Image (cartoon, rainbow, N blue to C red):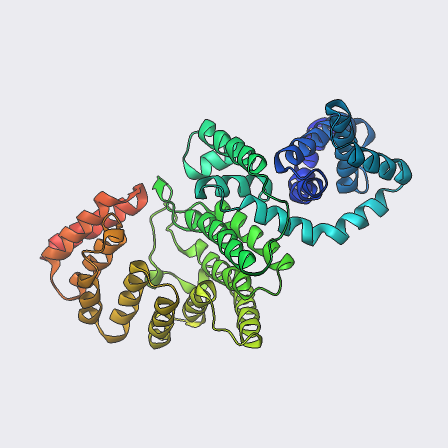
Length: 426
């Protein structure tokens, strides 16, 4: 195999194995930063040796063995963790070069717990939200610093600093590499789900820049969600989040025109929605509902949003949408997690069920909400409802106000076009 092809193959293998490798190493060395460095050392060795010797049958086991050897060297040089050094040394000597299969099987035995520990550590509340997102994408998503910076339109040095500071904070705060229990687990799981959904949302509707969407981020978030569902199978909200992301991701191909202009939900060609993702999402929602029912609990916020997304997915045409159920689901969501944004969405659903005047009444009540002061979707929705009521002059003003608040170029162009249309109809 040509060297260039081998390097591409090594890169692909490392992306697949990276999270598992770092998770297994972090369990042993109890330091996420050190674990990542050891994984990178193993990658360098692979780049040196595999082009000559060929890619091994069990590349993950090879990388782990190489990283363990480097760990022993590190402990020896630092004269730290002598007991661990001796244990790892005896383990590797006993395994020998021919025990890759056994090592790979051992990794598979622990992988669920290790990955879950790594996810909970990367999303620890001691870190800022921005740091949690960057570290999660780096360690579990396998993205490079450059890729993360490009996805979020942030300078690469800024992302690099966030990751370095995050790893340093975890070490300084002596955050344990473990899955928490009881109430702490529930609180930390909420942080994990928040990070994954933040990543997905940034891909689904980019905050800024010239692209309406960044599908790769949606794929990264979905991969993280699926990993989480595999290792935290008994958590209803994990499956609820996966359901929500799968169903929303099914619309990605229909959300923009060939030239990149946004296409709003009710105007989309539903034949272009990905039916495989919809089926996966509905299955995840069924799993979430079953787990919640077995525990005698109500659905959580992600599962409720997944149920709302399912209402849209099940409607063959926009006019077939069960708006009454959606209004009810938003009402339940507002009881669990009261928020002006939830009320805004409920207003939209209510306007579809009972007419624009009903929705506008709620929207006008939200006008003074501090949390929505700079939220461009409030004037955008208000403009839409005013246009439906024939109040085109006011609608144009709202669309222009919304355009001034958004930093996404595609979204701004759409809003300005709607303002122009409203002015022409005034």
